[in-house]
Image (cartoon, rainbow, N blue to C red; front, side, top):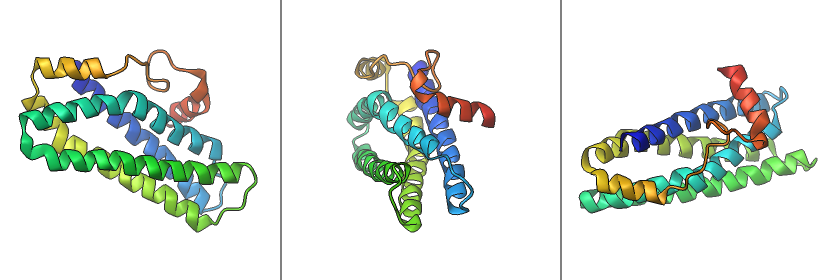
Length: 181
């Protein structure tokens, strides 16, 4: 249990760090002071790819087990699952706009700022809710059998940015993080 709880929280810390970096790039975009669009794309790509393939399966199983142990958690858990979908849609829209920019497309500044702000707000709120409401309850209510089910639902995939076997696909992102550390 402790290992999975630690990973869950660590992922949230890492995601928050990336959202901070995205916010910095959005500020540069707003000021027209040379944002790094490829870095912005890398941030959202990592949050989508790693989140969807490794982090969310862990959460989904923990959510299921938590609702079994505490049925009153069904509504907050369902809201968090819906937020996963809303974040995915907001991320998809942001990626589409950033890709348009990087291929010399013309995109209204307000549209990019709106999409990025929406993504940031949804994601930050989501992380804060899980940290405040879900993780403490899961730590208290889930037993070893529950955590084994969570572990079984979690693919054994290394984190390509923060893990021990970092992938070359996110080199620009890793470099940006090392500069801000």
